[in-house]
Image (cartoon, rainbow, N blue to C red; front, side, top):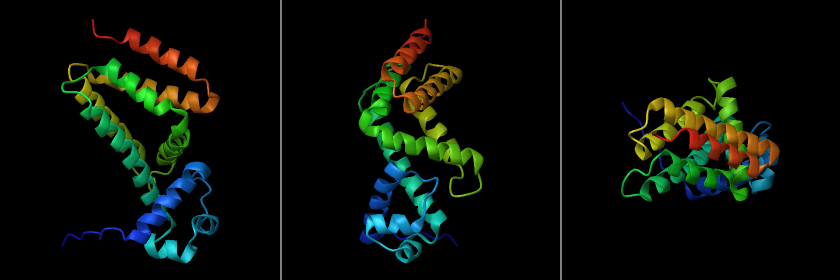
Length: 188
C-alpha cells in the first residue's frame, strides 16, 4: 500500500531553511548535529525527531539544495518562447552559476556531487546522477537539434569551469575558457 509523507510542519520547514543556510557556509562533510542545532536555535533531539536521523536531515538538505537548482532550470526554460540554443543557455547558466553570491550554494553542490560518487549508498545516493539528468534535460529542451554528445560536452565544460572557479576564484579565466569552448561547439 503506497504511503505519502505528510507536508512538513512550519517548524520543520523553518529549521530546514536555517540548517540549509548553515550548511551553505559550513558544508556537509563534517556535519555534527550538536553544533548545527545550537547554531539554528534547536536541539539535536528535535532535529532527530523531525528528520528521523542525521542521514534524513542530510537528504532533506540535499533536496533543498536541489530545489534551488531546479528553480534555476525552470526560470531559464520559461524565459524563451522557443528553444534558444546551447550557446545562449550555457552563457545564462554560467552567469547564474558564477555569481559571487552563489558561491556557497555552488560549493555545497560540488560537495554533495562528490560525496554522491564516493558514498552512493548513503544519504547522498543518486544526487550526482539526478543532477546530470536534470541539466541534460534542460539543455535538450533549450537545444533540441543538438546532439546528446554536444549537450554533454557543454554540461561537462560548465561543471569543470565551475569547479575551477571555486578553486581559484578566477572568473575572467574560467569565463574565457567557457566562451572559447562554446565558440568551437556552435552548430555549422
